[in-house]
Image (tube, rainbow, N blue to C red; front, side):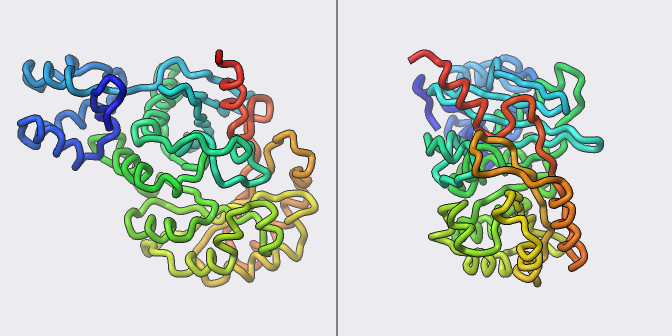
Length: 353
């Protein structure tokens, strides 16, 4: 991928692509492996630091290529420990990532698009519309930026990645797959497939293709148990209704112990009744899965509110008694720009022009 200065951003290249790139420069293929081993180390910003490359080759790289990185993000830290990063892209758009520290893991929620075209009515990002897909480097650099921020403050290391930030990941499938291969690459950022999860609102063809091409975990945003309610919340349901989505889930290609994670945001008076829990249990029967119940982050839209914890626990109990593994994911960062897209929207509004 060429940038306006006509240099190739090497962080856009997967391992095979990087090998081909150095071969096109007249170098042996192992030079690509050497570069890959340097690119994702903390503090590497210039080819002159790659000391096992010949000086002449480093000079060629400096003329032909570049190493992109996110600098000076806007950072908001919550009292509950979560951290929201707002990264500025080269074209002036902004994207968000959220660090969620827990006792035994540090999870980063990663964006795949600037904005989103899916238009889910309870989502702040959905109200922005789609600005553009992110390049592989822009996906990977969120991870590098959060990792470097943590390292500089002695906050441990990232252990898990979830693609549940701004955008619909599977609508940017090719760039997503390239980024995942870089993140998974041992000489890259070395995240195992089981430590990464990609969420989709239900793009059925892309979901099937994703299952064929990677072993990364899949999460499906469900949020309703009937088509009328789901279409009201998520316009994508008009194209891929529940019957088609669940059929694709039943035939989704997974390793033996893998499970699909179904995400269900509980909305007071809309999808949180006992009979909705019973129906959800019936719908998912036969699909190897886990269920994540999500509390609603405040978005300023009075139509959508999170139910009381008593109601959430009752919903969970109904599902558990029917044999499902059910987690409750609490809302985080209520004292900062909690809902995805809020900080990026605020930062972009403050930019000149």
